[in-house]
Image (cartoon, rainbow, N blue to C red; front, top):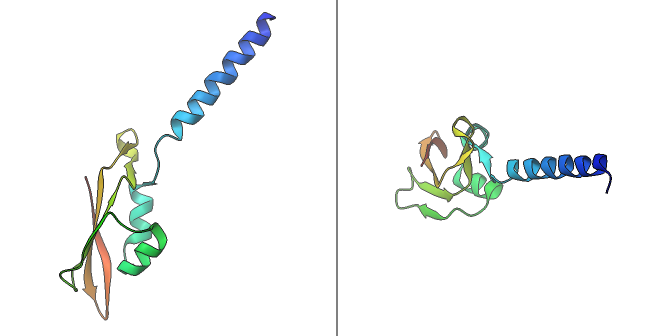
Length: 103
């Protein structure tokens, strides 16, 4: 195999490896996820992001839901968050998301 073909194959393999590594983190960046959640009801969040790993609906005016491995921290090397906890509170006639904790 000619040398330039070997070099080209090595470059292509490296680019493919880099692209696949960048895709390794699934989910949403913290900021994007937060922007799409705050101000939404529990049902709206679930409709957009799917069923959470757990729900605490024991306090109707202050429910919490937990997603696992749904978000990542772009300021920390795209480290995946094990948990994303969404807290809701009553605002007017609706109960909406107002705070997120990333663990």
